[in-house]
Amino acid sequence: MKRKVSQNKKLTYTPHETLPPLSTYKTTWDLATLYYKTENDPRIEADVSYAIKAYETFAKRWRQKPFTTDPTTLAVALREYEALTGDPRVSRPGRYFSLRSELDASDSQAEKAQAILRKRLRPAADKILFFTLELGRIPVQVQHVFLKHPELAHFRYFLKELFVGAKHDLTEAEEKIIRLKAPQASHLWQEMTEKLISTSHVTWKGKKLALPEALETIDTLPSVEKPKLWKLITEKLDTFGIPAEHEFNAIITDARQEDEVRGYKKPYSATALSYQHDEASIEALVSTVSTEGFKLSRKFYKLKAKYHNVPVLEYAQKYDTIGDEPIISFDEALTVCRDVFYRVNPEYGHIFDTMLENGQIDVYPRPGKRGGAFMSHGTGHPVQVMLNHKDTLKALETLAHEMGHAVHAHRSALNTPFYDGHSIVTAETASTLFEGLVYDAIIEAAPLDTKLVLLHDKITRDIATIERQIAFFNCELEIHNTIHEHGAMTHTELKDCMYRHLKSHLGESVAVRPEDGASYIYIPHLRYGFYVYSYTFGHLMSSIMATRYKADNSYRKEIDTFLTAGASDSVINIFKKIGIDTKKPETFATALAAHAKDIETFGTLVNKRTRK
Ligand SMILES: [Zn+2]
Image (tube, rainbow, N blue to C red; front, side, top):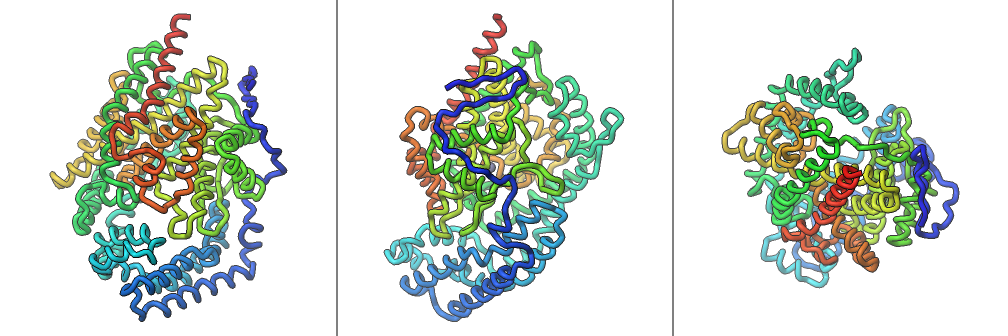
């Protein structure tokens, strides 16, 4: 394989594989072909009427009939329920209009249509709520019988999950009250802080910058400027100390009290259950990364300080790149990604091409289009990927990441509707697997100088996913426990907590100041109930899978077993099937090996440069 990086830093990539030619492809979502012609398409009304009738028919058939007394009747009821929840006609109108809103926030027709749909479909969907509630009330003795019954074999995992979850259910009246009180107990508080941030600004070089914009601008500044703007930002954040303190005390106390009422023992028990994951596995991850992982990030920052020839790096300079990253056009990005996807499995390459040809990938930014990137899937619907592509390395990584999600969605769709989704943690494993393989392909053949830049940037991004997220996890856990024990925390205490955890993973070579602790105010993820660990978990698991695949290509079989498992089993069991024990701390220690090796290589390259 030959690859050249020309003077203007454009990346020219020569694929390993003989790629099938790509016919003309679309760069915008073709919703008219994939869903409905327009908002006036008569098929929309037909589908809505069909959905309302389908819910009614199901409710009429099963509401008055005992369906939880014998396995045969239960199997019939479950089969019908699975067919109904997985019927694409029921969800197609809602999906069509919500996708239109993503493409254009000012699409008022789409917004109105969604409001009307909600009004018509929600009461219809509510008619079948009795079904799962009734299933949850099956006595434990009978549950055991059903879980072993051959006639219910297909529904075993679905029922098992439902029975476990039902242990934490309250009465219908209590559930209703909790749902009614949720906005004022939590969401409205979060919105207050978000609004404070989005409506405030700092003055930078004589120009007013909204705080979210200022946070984005930092990345684009020359290194020496970064700490100056960051100081303005933290000073501004600090002025929101009192509202933020009240927000945290309110939402954490609310979460804790609800956990107690529902019988969850640990602050992250509810999260583990809703991710189909396991507390022991989360604990093994957190303890290993907090010890072995933090050693690695501290080591890296020591090397980075040496590279820059400074005793310590400023906090705002921690992600500073060390050179120019290559410019990569979308076509170039496609070549790299298709090469990697086809190499892992021709089927994945084929999925990639089909999505391009069918207009399932919306590529470029446009006015009104929502920012960022995501993949969206639903039973019986085309998979959609949204990007906001610019010719950067970051955008290539995003393409690989979202297409990794898309391949996972396609392979999972081989399961029946109950099992064709996936846990947040397996989803992030699939996406980071492809992202990592694509990044490695780019690094592999780059000339030495570019290699050093790419490797450096990969490590800083890995640290942001591995160590930083676990530092956040530790911080969130400390906040939970402190508020629970002492009743409340002050802004100064919250700031100090964040400061200590930032320091814990960055070490002595990064000058974290107590003021940097005000970051806790603007990081929304700290409010999502330990969600932060899912990134780290996915990243580390995908790292193990990538290492095994690179050592022996036949591991692609296991990769496919993983991708096709969907939501048919628990996260622990899905990984067990491909030879990964996610309950053992050693597994996470092994997973850190690739990260450790990258840092070691970086160290060698830095030393080579120093000697030159
Ligand atoms: Zn993702």
